[in-house]
Amino acid sequence: MNGADALCDTLLAAGVDTCFANPGTSEMHFVAALDRKPQMRCVLGLSEGVVTGAADGYARMADKPAATLLHLGPGLANGLANLHNARRANSPVVNIVGDHATYHLQYDAPLTTDIEMLARPMSHWVKTVPDADHVSAFAAEAVAQARSAAGRIATLILPADAAWNTTEAPLQPQRDVAPRRHVAPERMRDAVQAIRSGKRVVLMLSGLALREQALRTAGRIASACGVRLLAQQSNARLERGAGRLEIERVPYPVDQALAALQDVDCLILLGAVEPVAFFAYPGKPSRIAPAHCTVLELAAPGDDLPHALAWLADELDVPADLALDLPAVARPALPSGALNPVAIATALAALMPEQAILCDESVSSGRSLFQYTRNLPPHDYLQLTGGAIGLGLPMAAGAAIACPGRKVISLEADGSGMYTVQALWTQARESLDVVTIIYANRAYAILHGELRQVGAGEPGTNASRMLNLDQPALDWVRLAQGMGVEAVRVETAEAFGDALRAALGRRGPFLIEAVI
Image (cartoon, rainbow, N blue to C red; front, side, top):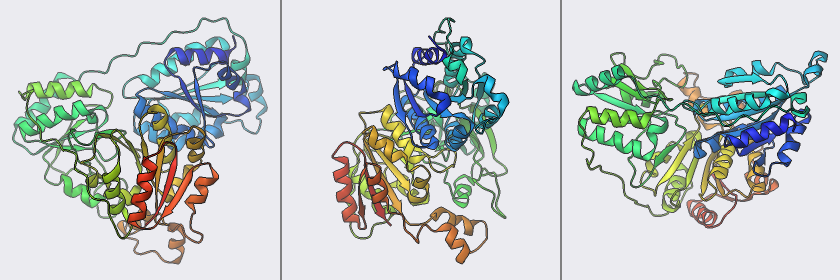
């Protein structure tokens, strides 16, 4: 056995059976070892942003880590933006980054970099394997680190000679992961006192608190005690739809967010972070909660959030059988006329199947989506968490690999989609059941709004050339077809409804370019 075999066997023993990869020369012995391990599903991404974004989407739906395989420092650097998103989503990911053989580093070959330095800002744990005998132990630790707490990014750097040298060191078994912590009694006491004080209290939720059963518990607390529920603005996964408690999110636009929390006296956080403006704006506050508002963290993202909610309900004497007003399925008629974001949301609400997975990177065009999809059949909603665009298409690929029996619907802004358009090729190669909807507004529309928000006025000639995606316009039909994905362009609501119905009625990847 060589070090690469030891790495593969250790990953498999720890339950990591999917590897998203974009390898190079220094990783060839690991590639050869993967060839000997048919239990490992290997998925090629044509850019590292696809690899890391797919690992994020996979982790959100599988509730376990995948491995990534990246080529030296530059390969890791190409994937850092979506590792930033994964970190913000608390997604568990195990990165395997190849490096030059240890004896070759002294010669400063062209691809030599300080990989540990590149990895640290987006990783919770970083280690370099010293030799083949340590590969299994380091790999077991990497998986344990990724699976701990709320979900962590673990980066294991594998020198080429550590991969190709033989080893007789025993394989390390899967390591036990400490259970999620229960919240401290004093925090629970403070939260109960705040709710019983008669003040205007908001419970702000994220993470596992947004799963169906935890949401029901939160709903019983809100109904019995008169508190308000909100989800933080960006969340890794939200279980929504008929029969599930509906919860609003903190709005993205700063003025709307300020208005949503202007009368709050106490903000209690369960897996969420205190809301702040996405950016600084002249004359507007960075902190969204009003100055008089007290912020209490009842439970951190890595705590046992369902247990915290159940304990809070018990402390508040909330009846376990308290009935909740949960939404029922109510589908609208298919829209007609002009094609715009509301028409897209309405058609989706009319046709989306049960247990679909919505991957949302529609950015400004999709802000109305939430209100039009609240009465759909049960589904999961995944969104951009760290603000680094280019996650949507690979996230959809990863979610589809994690949940092969469920329809994935990817809602994608045209500008964001171009960052990782190569993910369409991966969807085609893996025959993934993904319907991609491109909001083709031919612009970075969100930046037009941001230009006004910061007080810079309306765009002139130079600014328009940096914010618009015309001259030439992107041709998403040809882009998709060139990567093996069937596609159609639509320009009316009726045509969009027909295309969406057809796409949802078949398996495999399909793209709809919606010109809005």
